[in-house]
Image (cartoon, rainbow, N blue to C red; front, side, top):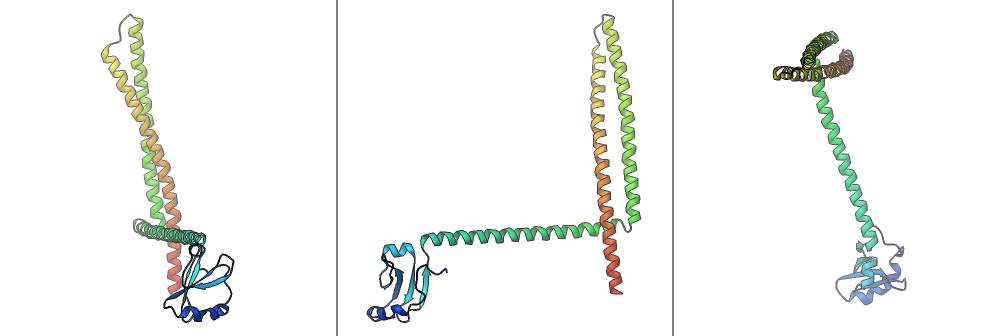
Length: 225
């Protein structure tokens, strides 16, 4: 524990008080009295209990325990709590880094198993992106087709109104159905475009990592030869 402020560098000056106290079995309290004088006593005044004191062996004057004052105790507790929180944070960070490292090893192993070579990865990338782009083109063509149908349906509805007729329920239903198809097709097109971007970025990331893993593997092989 922290040494009390204001205590003397040595207890030798108090040794002369020992004979008068040693007749009583038990411990001795060492504290600074209200006049600022270092004191030995068998009893501990309330003010001394608040300001901090030492407990001494009654025969040897050896310090058995130091009791901090209230302010020092709170400060020490806060410091200990801060250290504990810091240690817990460091431990959590280390565990997270270990988890990430283990997960990365699994990803790397899977990457090496799926793509034995860089050429295999590039081929897979080109095939998948080409397939997505084909779906994008088909969806764009479908969107044009649906919009053309909607235009014709709306033109028929306008003709009916111009001739003084009420737009038929069947035609209204056709228009609503086509508008729904156009909206869904638009969402599909946006989703495909996002897939294309994500796939392209993922393949680029995998390509860089695969090249790095193969470089490491080659280096390790050369080192063992």
